Length: 460
Image (tube, rainbow, N blue to C red; front, side, top):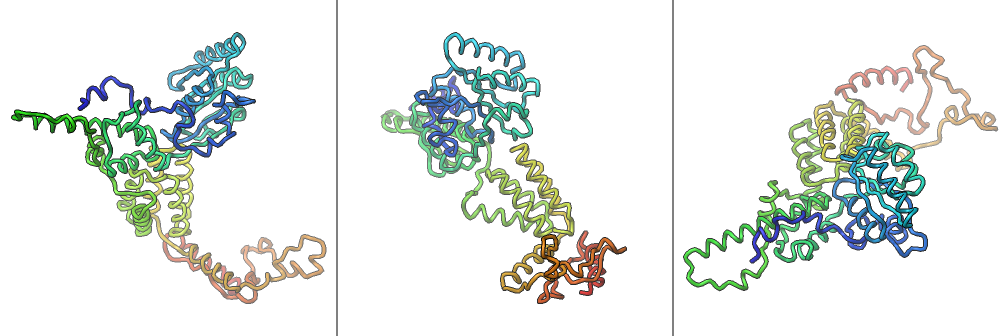
């Protein structure tokens, strides 16, 4: 049996070893890798017109930004230079640009410059890229986890093609994990995965390929180590030991070993299954029930299980309008702000505005009056209870409208001291119909009193 040290010690990380050498090996991002797409054109050395457009790859960590850049460079045969915005400065950028210009003029070789974390570059550093990008000295492939509209200067953004990467699906992650287990660059069949362990690795990865492969490598080390300890214990006191076939068999990684390796509890949470719907249901009902502690608990479960934070943010926005409404109008603003913040900063930091919005909504006054108002109004419309618009409310701005009586008798509210005047707004068939009935909760207490006075003036 292969020892843990022989398998893992001194090697480059599994995620690095398993980087695809061509676009054909890339898992996920199929929307960017269709025939004739800009990335495929960049990677095709035999193309009649090889791609030369610079691109900015925007997506969450572990979705393949570096992988795509390196696969394009290897496939195209172009010179590849990599810089990190964390360590590189303006001087480094200018040196790369000058060398790229020399390579083009002296040897006819084009250069791909891969710039990781471009959002960390200052405006001056990004400006230093412009001459090389604009004049074609380099083909820039920049990667960022933050919204380029906010983090990349406009001149560079306008000279590049913005491509958005999506979190890997469970099927994509399964393909990567299976390949890493069997591939000679990876674990070369030294271990196998139990179905439960494979599922656990996929769920823990949350759409991040690097996280999946790192967890796999750590879990395999635990499995091999556990088996070595078991064999050593069996060896003590054994006179004859003939276990050649057993030693040749690969170690089996279990779900418990995955949990031990990553030091995290394995959550029962299928993003497409019952648990997904049960947890989000409990989350919303806890907010509606004004229990911030329960709501934050279910939020944490969704985040830890890799739920799409945009899905959570959308549910918060819906809840703010449906269950809080005018009892606290600020709730909707906070929910929308949390959704924008998640899109802007991504995860894991996005968990903080999600938690803030969750707690605010849970502790806010509640009213579903706006929700029931639109539901009742739509029910009437769907049932055919609508009637023609009263003539005095119809558009009177086009030729011939006045001859039809449109706008005749309309009273302009701003011409009166109260800003409200008695006139009919609903169709004849619905006069007296009330859809919105405010509660006495929170801000709707004031709305209720004001609306009652308004309705008395309107005569309804």
